[in-house]
Image 1 (cartoon, rainbow, N blue to C red):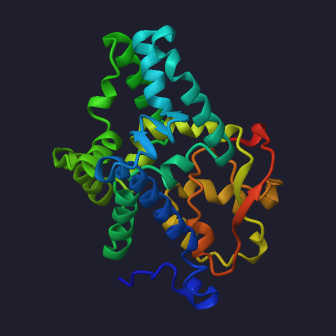
Image 2: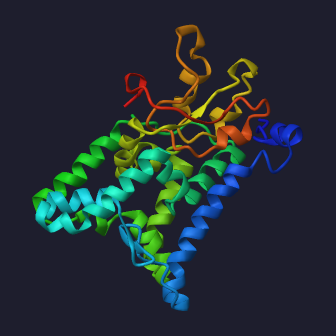
Amino acid sequence: MKIPDDGREAREKKGWWRATRWLWARRLVQVGVMGLFLLGPLAGVWIIQGNLSASYTLEILPMTDLLWFVQMVAAAGWPVAMQATLGAVVVVVLYGLAGGRSYCAWLCPLNPVTDLAAWLRRRLGITGGWRGERRMRNGVLLLVVLLAWVTGMPVWEWFNPVTWTQRGIIFAAWSGLWAVVAIFLFDLLIAPHGWCGRLCPTGALYAQLGRVTPLFVSAIRREACTDCHACHRVCPEPAVIDPALKGAVRGVGPRIRDVTCTRCGRCIDICPEEVFDFDFHLPNTSRVVP
């Protein structure tokens, strides 16, 4: 079986940089943010203090992970969680502008792991696998909040692979490596894009901010599409593409309005015909897919 070399045609037509620029931009952001966290414990330069759950930048700007904040409200009530409210508001504003699940593609330390698993699946020709409903992660999110409410503790943080991964990177706490390995093997052997696409409660919560974002990926030149399906193969949420790409006959605009779009930019990179690009536009919530 011949395995498609995703990106070869794009590299030939657009050049290496324009065929990979958004991928490298995401990697630079991910490494850069983790590097800022590391500067404190390694060099005593505290630009960002804390972790991805709760942090201060330059001892001024607070940021609070939304899932951690919701758990604290459910577990301890509003008065206890109130001190983290400003940080949660900052996060809502930032990711509301950028698209909620941009957190998943641009900041989450597990994103390179799941991207590597997806790339290996393509290179090894692994097809099939478990494909649960995308709404399943909403059920996991509800379960996480209920557990916090029942136990009075943010129980999910004991198991959160994002927490374990960042802790392992910053503090060399390699006991958390099990989470990284488990998710990698799960995505590689069992479910394509399974963790982020079907189970992760963090992504489920951030996706809701996609209902108000002005930033979209748009098939601005969809008439140039040759149906090569390269975008579908590299997209972590391929179901979001067709309504924007093929919706002209139904009067659907070219913007990807599905809240599960991660704004990763891979469809922009990989398309040799330059069909896709980022687009700023006030959202029409009647078109948003839950």
